[in-house]
Length: 299
Ligand code: MLT
Ligand code: MN
Ligand code: ZN
Image 1 (tube, rainbow, N blue to C red):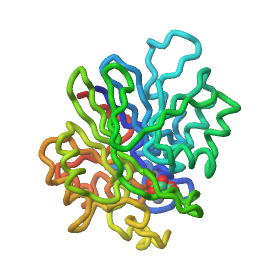
Image 2: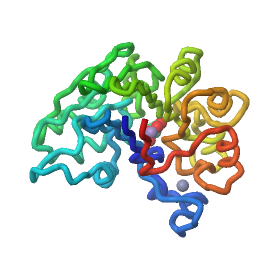
Image 3: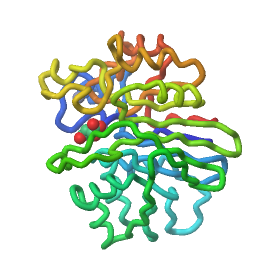
Image 4: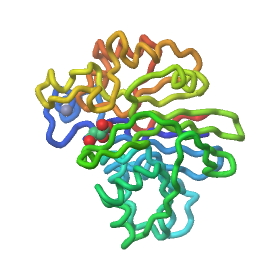
């Protein structure tokens, strides 16, 4: 199995267009210990199989160039066989519209509630009907889907948090899912969970049984944005468990023995972006990596 981080930042990227926090400024000034990052997305393939994009960020055009290989011989060929969505958030879905030039309908996988959101609240699927069209495959929580003969994905529930644009309607459903990919040819397992609100024993078991996990590293403290004066919402209000604190993500992740642990979906304000920060050193001391764009993991 081969996995590539195409975007390690959360929505907005690093730097974010309207942000002058110390991280965004450091990137603009080309500081050596921080780099420019695209918005949240990964790509995955089994050995010799097709690439699947997991979440389609607004940066998808540049991101897909990271998958280009010279084997694509025809003049028009998609570098991906499909797009798998973990939620209906704008940072994870807007890229679908950028892919409208596809010569075939785009194959998109997501839960039923995500389909509803992308049809009614943020009608990307409806809009795409007039371009390439979409072949939608519904993902059910608890089910396992074969993507290719060697690559399968198991779907698990992570949070019930609807995107802001759907909050006027109160609809319960599988708004945020996590994905466990298995490669039948190698037996290797990867779990991707970019929107993680809380830990449970079941989730920890799933992580421990994986060879590699890519996990929500959005915020450092629960009140990061309040301290900076840029929001009144906490990390937990936004469905992201912070890293620090006695019951933060680091506490749980540091207990896992087997998997390689990598943080993704890292907000531009998070001090762990700075390689020399004390927060970054704490993460690394706990045996956890900070994801970066282009990081390729072969399992
Ligand atoms: C999230 O990850 O919580 C959302 O993408 C936030 C947003 O609306 O940008
Ligand atoms: Mn997000
Ligand atoms: Zn910033």
